[in-house]
Length: 242
Picture: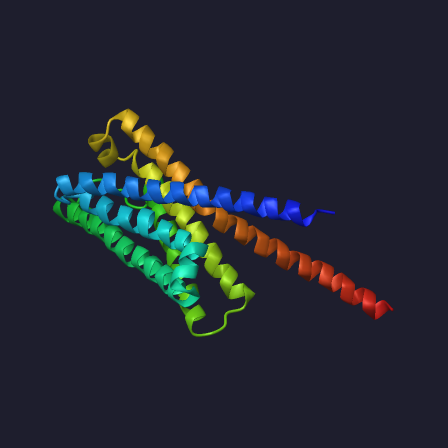
């Protein structure tokens, strides 16, 4: 059997690990967002710069921070559970609204180009960047829609699990889209190859460090549900046989 001292040591180790990951995530999310936002402001948000500006703020910073703050014991002790949930909701809603605005900018630009030149080849949502972006945005909408009822009703396991799944899967898809975005024409024009590689590397690390705790909780909840469902059913059948 595991002693109390061993359990306490495992808990402190896990707390240190996830705390370190959270710190890395805050730094990387802010750094990546600041670097891209600065470049877009230098370009005066013209053309793709406007799309990159709003989508990076929404899907990298707001979405990433929404996941991080929800699991922050420090913020929970400071703000209280209710205010922490409100902060989480505000960040998630901002991620969706601002992100949809950023996608809308690019969509409008594509339509305008097609109107100006009907023979022009316009690819939208067909690239890896566009595909993962629109899938992530749809999942984020699912997270928003499944999260709002939790403020008015005492949601059960199914609703909370759906909300967690949509949020986690949406964040992963949007960060994959972000990494593909560095390969687009805009990314190649604005950054040198080694800078693109650095952006991809830091974005990948930020994705892992931001999502790992939420992924751990999601897997733990599913495993707990599966254990209770199957073992509980077998126990009930055993009692009936007696």
